Image (cartoon, one colour):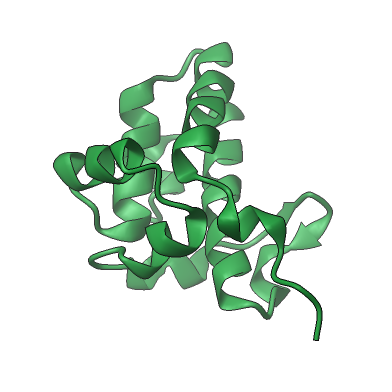
Length: 117
């Protein structure tokens, strides 16, 4: 059995500013990034802020997510050359779902489409 992927132990707080920067470079906002993260995980603004302050790793961040959105299974497509719907490791799939949503935001998709409304 191989060692767990290093992203699992990476702090969400260290990657979050990269998500925000990617969105802002394309004219989107931190608030939109937060809306996506909260939609995916069920965190509210205070819960998200607490996870960032605590420097929770991705494993903890997703394990403690209050209400993972049931519609997240509708997220399809390719991130880093891998189809998200075919990723077998549940934690890696959650991380890639988030990556995919941030990519869609940066590509200018409407929030209603990103949030599978």
